[in-house]
Amino acid sequence: MVGFELGAVAFNPDGWGPPETSSPFLSNHPNNVPFAPFSRSEKLGRIADWTRNYNNPSRNNPRNPSDAVFDFSLDDSSAALAADDDSSFRLVDGKPPPRPKFGPKWRFQKQHQLPQRRDEEVEARKREAEKERARRDRLYNMNRSGGNIPRREAAVFKSSVDIQPEWTMLDQIPFSTFSKLSFSLPEPEDLLICGALEFYDRSYDRVNPKNEKRLERFKNRNFFKVTTTDDPIIRRLANEDKATVFATDSILSTLMCAPRSVYSWDIVIQRVGNKLFFDKRDGSQLDLLSVNETSQEPLPEAKEDINSAYSLSVEAAYINQNFSQQVLVRDGNKVTFEEPNPFAADGEDVASVAYRYRRWKLEDDMYLVARCEAQCVSEVKEQRSFFTLNALNEFDSKYSGVDWRQKLETQKGAVLATELKNNGNKLAKWTAQALLASADVMKLGYVSRVHPRDHYNHVILAVFGHKPKEFAAQINLNTSNMWGIVKSIVDLCMKLNEGKYVLVKDPSKPQVRIYEVPADAFENDYAEEPLPEDEQVQPPAEEDANGGETIASANDVVEKETDAEV
Image 1 (cartoon, helix red, strand yellow):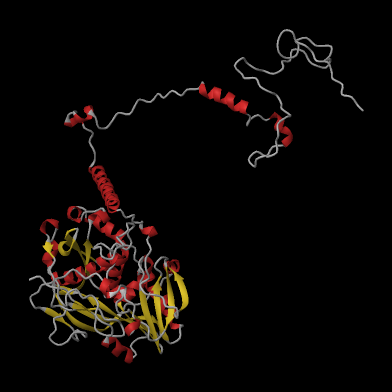
Image 2 (image 1 turned 135 degrees about the horizontal axis):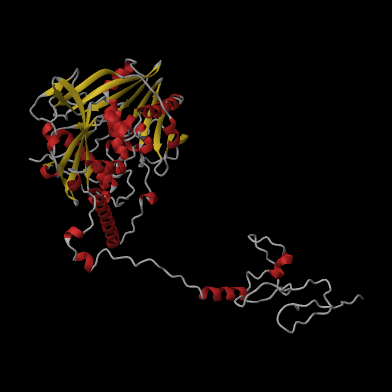
């Protein structure tokens, strides 16, 4: 057995470390070399500890386990020493204390000593204060009602039509593919113009919040929302082989602005021979107008609430109909066209509207015919201009954060920007319809409730006009992209067999699906209504058998009638 021989250890009687003079035991040790440089303030600890267990080397500390005996970074004694060092360290803050903005000195200073602020900063602070106040009011109402209303991101929307088990899904198209499409086509030609137009009353251009006008109700005037295959003019044009694809301006605008839509919608597609018909269902949401569709603030989900999505859409449709007839010069003068209104009976009082049946060339042997609408006409210096009339409605300024009565006169751009944020899809569809009809001016009316809780009475606060092409560029609506979406859907449907199909916007995802449906779908008892009849919110009107009808029965002319104020 080999023994362990312990060498001699030099003793230093004068202090720490090896002796200053060379020891006979350390013959090769140089003179005057200290043990280690140190000062009195340094803490002396252990040099090495072979009793420690180093079984779990961390990933962030890939050291050699053999060096662990010299590592005291995680040792308790090292932490205690570090804590002693930290406790003796103090940070001195040399900055002066902040002066309070509001205090006795600020309050009793003279007026000329107050800091001067620019008008833009003052307006910005007012806007932020209004937004914060509106947010607090919403939170207060939510807490008061005891309901925890989810935000728009968490809202669950229902499909516009119930998907039946016997339906077969053929394709699914995400909206991301629509943004890359582009298609250019020549100018359209007018095949036929029907109806009669009244003249626009220019006195409404001078309406402002201080000089508001009460919105009237029109009972005796009938409004028609006829689908494609029920239109006798389109049937006649189809029999004459004037085109391959047939639709209406409301259906085309829905397709063109599909990437901007949030709510679910559906379009019925019928392939008959080599022709394609785009229709809407009876009771479709296309007959109504969405409100706050693209807003981030959620609307109440209760069906009986006057501010629910469906109640507001009915109210918006009612406002649009009455507004389009109130801003006309009602002196009996009309501009008539080649044929009368194809949906009106003899002697019937119909709304001022002109139907332009226009044809676009999609390919060498493919044409599209659409029925487009204009609501009134204006004649200045013997030049005739066609107008489209639409109305935006304010139901509660707490939802938008902008009070129209205060902002319309001085900051109409801010009001329009807010509407573009909250109703971007609706404004884009109106602009697309004006472009399809080649309207010279699109008039936008701003209609508000007399009181936020009164959805029966409204006032017109302002009317502004826009040129459709300029307004489309302002809202980033590309005409080539709109027609590219229509062309891609037409090409997809032309590859299908003869039959009936339905194109449905997914209620929760930015995509559309196309289903093959039975030939008798959406007819008679098969039709799917958005809500049962007993749960439908009636439009604001007096109690009358004819008042408040928004959609007529199936296979009949769709009429919208509202009551009149005498």
